[in-house]
Amino acid sequence: MNQKKFLVVFFLLGFFARSFSQEVAFKAPDYQAIKNEILKKDSKFNYKKQLQRLQDSDTTLTNEEYRYLYFGYFFQPEYSPYSVSPDEEALSKYYRSETIEAKDYPEIIRLATHSISKDPFDLRQMNFLAYIYHLSGDEVMAKKTSAKFQGIFEAILSSGDGKSCETGFHVLTVGHEYVFLNVFELQSVSQSLIDHCDYLKFEKGKYKIEGIYFDITQMQKKEMEIISDK
Image (tube, rainbow, N blue to C red; front, side, top):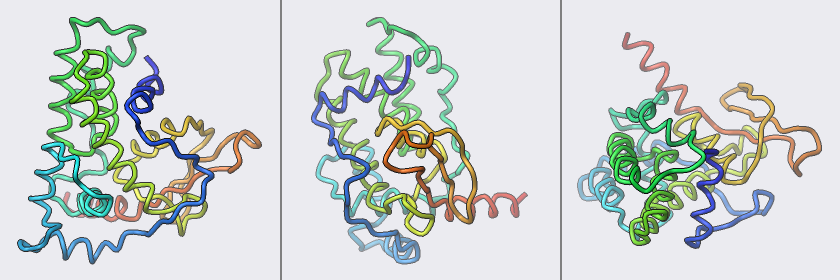
C-alpha cells in the first residue's frame, strides 16, 4: 500500500491543508537557546516534562512547545540521524498490502506504538497508526495521533520555507524529508548535498518550484560525534 493513501485520514480528521507555495512566517531554530532552555529543571520547556506530554498525546501542546520538543531532540542521548524503526521489517508487509484485514489491526497498533515509544518523532509510523486507528473505528485515538503528527510537522514547517539552503526546513532525519514530500504529494527526481543542506530536485516544470532545501546542519554534527566516538 502506498503511504500517500494513509494521508487521506488526516484530511478526513480535519488535518490542516496548506499549499507549499503559500507565503508563511517562519523562524530558524536557535539551537543554543533551545539547548539551554530544555536543560533547565524549572523551565516550562524542560525536556523530560514536555516529552512526557507528547507521549501522553497532550492535545494542548503549542507550536512553540512542539518546536522545543522537535529541535531539542537533537540534544538527547538517544537521538540518531540514522534512526530506523525496530518494527520496520514486521510492519513492511502491511505497508505493501493492497488491503489490510481487520484481524491485523491490533498487531499493527502494537508494533507502531512500540516503534513510536522508541522514537517519539517516528512520523512514518505515526501516520500509519492514525490511519489504522481510523480504520478500526477508534476515532479518539486517531485524532490524538494525527494531532501529534500535525504538531510535529508544523514545527518543521515553521523552521523555514525550503526555497534556499539559508532558509531550508530543519529536519531530524532524511526520512522526514520524504514524509514532507508525501504530505504535499510531491515527487523528487534527485537528491544532492549542497553545503549544509539536502536538496531534493523536482521534474522541470512539474511544480511551481524547482526543488526543496532541507537544513541538515545538526544531523551532520551528530554524525561527526558518532564517528569521533568510534
